[in-house]
Length: 170
Ligand SMILES: CC(C)(COP(=O)(O)OP(=O)(O)OC[C@H]1O[C@@H](n2cnc3c(N)ncnc32)[C@H](O)[C@@H]1OP(=O)(O)O)[C@@H](O)C(=O)NCCC(=O)NCCS
Image (cartoon, rainbow, N blue to C red):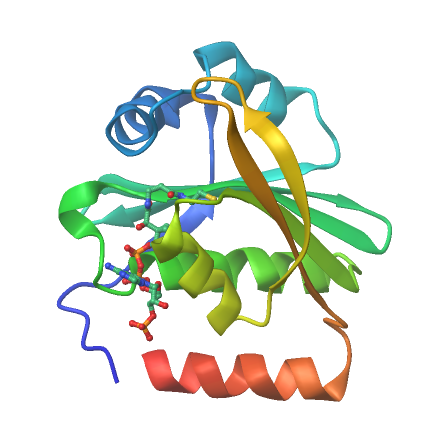
């Protein structure tokens, strides 16, 4: 069981948070979203739901998803490097899964770089499996994307799995 020194306060992302989110983004990704991508997502996209995670008032994590009827799509999740490996990414992923379920999704998908073993391990822990490869999906280095899906989110098997994992983090 992981012991967290500090808790993660998760709340909806606001436009005022974008500067801090961009700082985390720059530390986490080789290609980054521009400010207006986050801005449009949280102000214009009715299907999008974005969150920030604060540790002692500092934004150290964020994540987002779209929910389109029964399907959800995780668009991004990140934890600032100095806070990685302490359960915060897992907490953000759980929040996204709970949000997807609450909004009626049964299935959830995401893309992940083939080389990103850390993220793949996290997603597999939460029931995602690779169903497809998108060749050359990432334009910066032509890397393949693995397409992962999890579900049935509303089924007893998945709900029990999620409950057990949440208990393990407590
Ligand atoms: C991927 C990421 C969000 C994980 O967040 P984190 O806070 O570091 O991860 P956690 O401490 O919550 O660990 C959760 C699980 O992730 C996996 N994991 C975490 N660190 C790992 C490591 N160094 N090696 C392998 N697996 C690892 C494990 O499955 C772990 O569960 P376990 O402790 O039971 O083994 C974070 O590393 C990150 O922001 N990376 C850069 C951005 C990124 O790649 N985002 C995903 C894009 S698809």
